[in-house]
Length: 300
Length: 153
Image (cartoon, rainbow over all chains, first blue to last red; front, side, top):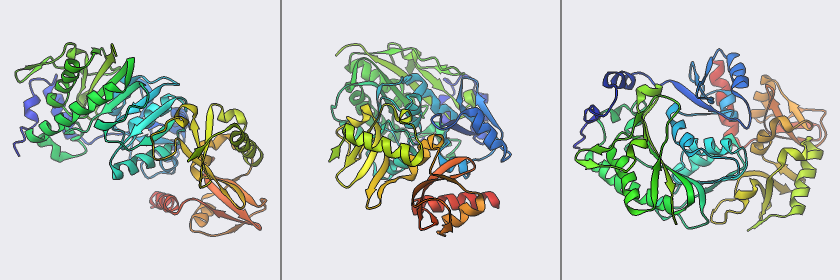
């Protein structure tokens, strides 16, 4: 297996003890309120009748933390919220979609970020949610239908082959990855990903980020994100784009605790601007882990 | 495969206003597209222009039947508070009976209605000769029954 384990990240994690403690704790229950259908206050009042308390995030009240599981409630069945780890807000905050935008979500399943984008655009513009895998696409469709926005269209292209069909204002690549940041849900990931898996995924990620960039208009925003800690799947992939396309990293400062992107790792140097990316570790939000890069297309 | 035009939009807005009291302003900016099989989808104008998807854009809203337009449960749920007529609120006992497939007496006129529980529209119902039935898809019915059962345990 040659899984190097999470210990290899000890030199880059800002507070290793807090990181390890958070990884060992059960994951809190977080949700994204369906702002087309309700408000955090109204949802809080409804759930209070079931003995559930709800705390909106100070940095964005549509993300709420609840006191107990709410997946089997009438409100969930109706689509009044989407169960989603709090850290999953970061890529969409970096994307910053606006009403009327044309947005591509290249690797969309299971759909949490797709619906977050669509809700922020308030049934205007268009979110093209792409997912080639049949089973994962079904999950995407189920979740989009349950939340109910009208501004989503689902496509099924391989991400690295996504066709030229007009330029997008914003593109999100939430790439398939070794998913180390989800270790609180999947304890087997505590051993870290194997080096072979990381290399295989990094090859695919380089194809995806370049194709996504090529679908972006000049001046448009590309967000590249993963839920892994591996620099080979994060800063190295972004650096590959910078070396091959007219792109520049622009600062993304999440409104919650985070660390900056790495400028070097294991003998490789990254950037320019890799330090403008954000790394979110499980102890920062008492959630999962994420890497987020915001990139601008500066020429055709 | 898809047809979208002003007359379809007028037809849908008129039907929603007459049958469910939905003001046309609630659907500002939305387009409707109709497939050859009579399915009608609602989408934002920008989504209605996307041409490389195998599936229509947006949300499946209705389909044509011999009895007229039949709304989808997902569409009625998305309209929720905008629905001010053709709406029947049911308590939990009645909801369970409907989900189990029972036909229940009602004074409502024949046609399609929006079913609501706890103040929220949850799907489409049908009234025929004074009997109300739930027209949720079977999978969604079973999911909701499971949700109600887990809560009562």
